[in-house]
View (spheres, rainbow, N blue to C red):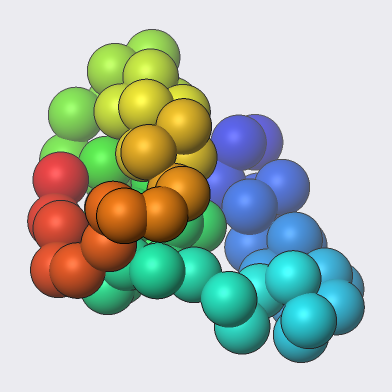
Length: 64
């Protein structure tokens, strides 16, 4: 269910919002990868920590 919601966000969120991610992979892709690798609870927690870090001067390549 969580993955479904993230994928809908990726499809429907304005490109102005989605196109500004400072990290590779994007924050939404990161959360999907983290959920696949660690399960829903840990994956969402890792994804939320990533969203909090998504501000200058942070950025770069960061995989779960």
